[in-house]
Amino acid sequence: MENRNEAGRREYPTPSRKDLKKMIYFDNAATSWPKPPEVKEAMVRFMEEIGANPGRSGHLLSIEAARIIYETRETLSTVFNVKDPSRIVFTQNATESINLALKGLLRPGDHVITSSMEHNSVMRPLRDLEKKGVELSVVPCSPKGKLDSRDIEKKIQSRTRMIVLNHASNVTGTLLPVREAGRMAREHDLLFLVDAAQTAGAFPIDMESDGIDLLAFTGHKSLYGPQGTGGLVIGERIHEKEMIPLKQGGTGSRSEFEEQPDFLPDRFESGTPNAVGIAGLLAGVRFVLKRGVEPIRRHESHLIEKLIEGFKDIPQITLYGTGEMKDRIATLSFNIENLSPSDVAFRLEEASGILCRPGLHCAPSAHRTIGTFPGGTVRFSFSFFNRIEEVEQAIEAIRHLAHQGG
Amino acid sequence: MVYGVILFPSIYFALRAEKKSKEKGLSVRLIPVPRHLSPDCGVCLRIPWEEKETIHSLLEKEGVKIEGVHPLKTHEK
Image (tube, rainbow over all chains, first blue to last red; front, side):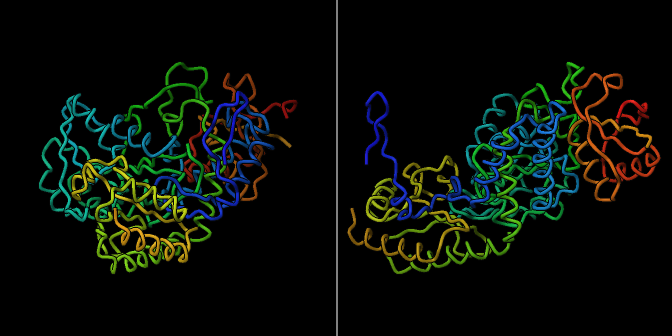
């Protein structure tokens, strides 16, 4: 099927509704799809019935828009066990949250420790800070992507200020020892930043018992909100006045002053927010709470377990990451002998309508760690909406592809 | 009824104050901030003046930052 725009130029083909039904979407680590229908409904309701700028104007609709954002903060605080919802600030995505935490708190002369399994959302701002005088230690992980928390401890020195870890790798799905690292950070009086892009909503997170000081999350993956939503939880051990905002501007508060407010959440929320997106995020988070993070995890673990099991008798397949369900989430990387990841992805889409992500997944360091740089891997990632039949179809499609070879 | 208003540093606290007060069955309402109290463009919480101590201590307990508590003149409803 081909679309032409008004000028008659050829545009990219748009899948028809019928095609969409036949597709198998295994790219939930990039963004979850489909979303629960109530997410779209909440966004439509916001556009049709509310629409105003939240908290800027004092009229009914402005208050209603602000109320939706307030409710989202409060609802998210139950997901992550945050006592004070004002300590959740909204951002565009986890990347912005990580940038805010790192650039807002680290100063030249500080030392920061991270792992070799990080995404570029952590690596790139850290490499930038390194040029500006922040010292960086990257702790190597095992070829399965596992991190021994004792290896972090060995790197701690007198100027160490922060430990930064992803909760689970976007390449292998391997969980990092967040709780142990959190305990260690408290013992050594360090700040602990967790990149929860892959886990928020899909794996239990508790700011208190995990010892997290800064939690960067995205709204559009396992919280089932729309793209352009995310946030940073700023724990009680952080003095917000010492954290520099990425941007300054209008907040709807203290309008008579030309200085940026020093209180939460306004200090870090300048400019009109993505209120329609946050309305959708609220519906997504409510969906997660209604189903429960643990049941969602059980469903997704079941799917990944079946996938790994099905791959076992296909000798041409190399699996990456750990096979232990307790140490992983529902994201899996693999390769097929004599086929490049992009070939596999293309042929899966052509032959079976399976949509996945080949390549380096914005995480070159993680691929170096597991030995797949620069070729990359094929990645399957599941959500609550994937079904066991889809996994079975995928196993058969891969088996066929593996036997065909290059 | 004699009313008063509570002013907050931001809409977040105003909404939290409204929610926590209503949960306790208190008759409160968000209204635009009267011009003579603050040049800000936001909202404040109108409260029954006789409940000001109850509400004040409730909000402190709930972590709501308060900027000021003022009586309203009778024509300012």
